[in-house]
Amino acid sequence: QVHLVESGGGSVQSGGSLRLSCAASGITASPYAMGWFRQAPGKEREGVATLDSDGYINYADSVQGRFTVSQDNAKKTLYLQMNFLKPEDTAMYYCAADATYISSTYGPGLASYEYSYWGQGTQVTVSS
Image 1 (tube, rainbow, N blue to C red):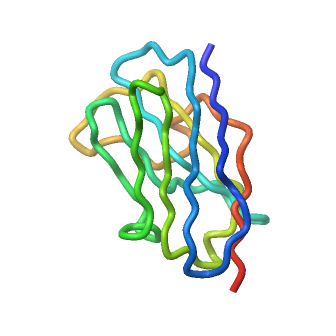
Image 2: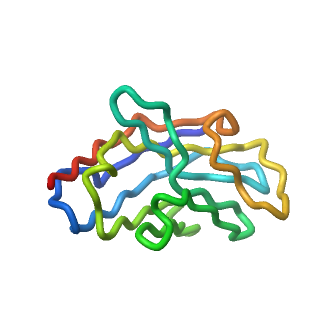
Image 3: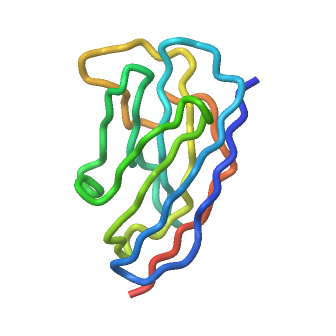
């Protein structure tokens, strides 16, 4: 059973930084993909950053150059370093995993329907 637990959310002023963590357990498939998604009130869930077990990474255009996704295989933890935060980054951030992932030259997708395991989310609020 895959279990994902996010932490690290909080409130920060515009231009600030936060680091989210996702502790993962139960992922035995290889290859696999994991990622960060977010959902603001009244909006659809959107992909922020994803990576796969081969190291391929994809970012949403809106966070490219500001956010960095990484993983610590030994600790089985996924991270999202968020710098230069903007008010429009305010959302609930979710960690997700795809245990049926098939590697491709395009890397892991940013569409939420591709991921079958989800954490409970951590709130990020950026004030202007």
